[in-house]
Length: 213
Ligand code: ADP
Ligand code: ZN
Image (cartoon, rainbow, N blue to C red):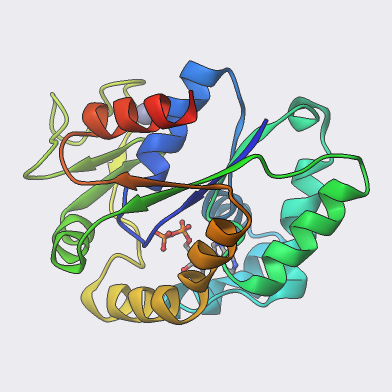
């Protein structure tokens, strides 16, 4: 089963991807995490992506598509995956369909997590993320039990460089212009599950699991 998560930055894709991966026994593939890993390891890919990420722009398709398709060629995802952050525009969606079709596979469902713009801005402002397992926290809405430390794995929490006001605005702009048209395209394909993304992470997860059944 291949599932795509759609939704704006701050909609909760990362949180839900982790929860769904556990419940559905699927591996989560997050393009943003792949880029951040490359950046931390200072690989050629990381160096190419850095400037775009800092500005809140999309990394060019040829770089992104190659990176994600290479990840999807690994054995742990040969029977399915939860895709978070990819595809993010029509060209990426086409490249993904083509690559899966070449192996007789397809995207089964696109889960669209819907959250109002005001809520998105609020969430991204106070976001802290685990360096080790990428679990996200919010300083007001969902603080960790111990300050600066991940509840799940004890890892150190940090704030993403692109979670600043200017970059957040740009990321939302890019989302509405380039990514949100995918919602209609998966709807037309009969694959869209629209989920109300406000409320607790557990509630949202319950809605997603119910919709997938
Ligand atoms: P968010 O969804 O919260 O904006 P991500 O972690 O998914 O954050 O992505 C962070 C950054 O990585 C993006 O702003 C962009 O620069 C880059 N990126 C991630 N996924 C893609 C993609 N599919 N295509 C192009 N750039 C991407
Ligand atoms: Zn952690």
